Length: 466
Image (tube, rainbow, N blue to C red; front, side, top):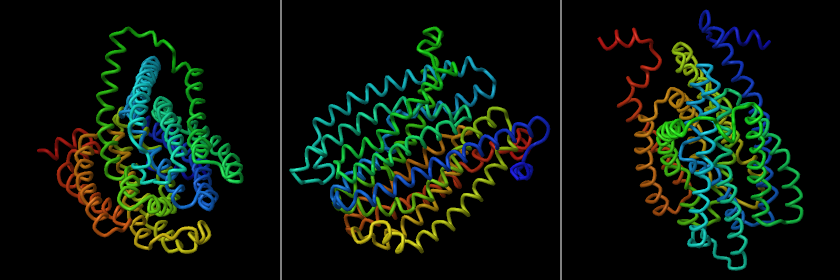
């Protein structure tokens, strides 16, 4: 059955056909492992809400959900180095230069470790200066210590995750991302019994942070051991100081563009929980978190289909396989778009029943908020599919301009509309409006020819320019 499926895919000819088949097989293996890992992650997400909301209460639950939402957002603290490693490692792999891969991986992890140490110092100082109760609009004096301890543990784990997150990115560049997903799945399996025991004993928010985010960070260390055993990560790379400096500059140069993109995305949507907490209170954060997690199944599914393509696009770009790039992009856009529209509609239609079974009468979620998240989920699916292509071919500057436009519009609308209407749904609708405007103006208006030049052979580009 699987062999028939792969014969139907748009392979090239000759040597390209073999490479195409190998790429799709690697992507299929990654997706299969990702499905297993993501299903477990979804289970952890569901039970972390239904088990903890009744005993934490809306306000404490909102504080914990704020930390949970920031876990992915603060991954930008690697300054884009992890994402740069995907493209650089994939390019070295395309040239079968394993010595170069070892140098890139070793230098990249060293660089990320230094960044993690620097961030630890800066975040520690910030934690001593900033009052977390004011940031989270959390005024209960009796639980102030719990909030501070949870924030401390969360920031420690975040700094440890900076180099470990880079190691995960290396596996994407090596087209061995399935190993990362297997390790993540084991972490989720460990989190489930810890969460169950913790909820039976009504544990505090710091304990919940350790049982979820902490377990995943610890499991990521296994990947570092794996790279070391494969000879791709050494305490000493054997390269000269000049080579180390050149690699660091190259990694930072590409990483700075990815970092700018991550900052833009974070400003556009990553701080939604903090904005809502400040303008409307922690209770509204809980409603936003539940609505977003209701559609998380779709977001996770789209990520499973699109993220494995990043390394494949980078490999095909390095080898000049433009036919693979063109056909795979079309398949990805059409497939993810259709899945997103159908799935989002079904989740929205079934949301009353899903919410009653999930959170019962402990929390009410407005219909307008559910509708906004449903639309945003569809746009996000198209954006992820196209974004993986742009990342893989190294088309970063056009993305940066689009993100700047989107960020400027989104932040302006969020502070204005949420404050004016006092409705949490506008935090999502603002992102929807900004995304549509930015994508239409930048990608279709300014950079259409440049982006699609990656899909045409040199002679075709010369003919079109003539």
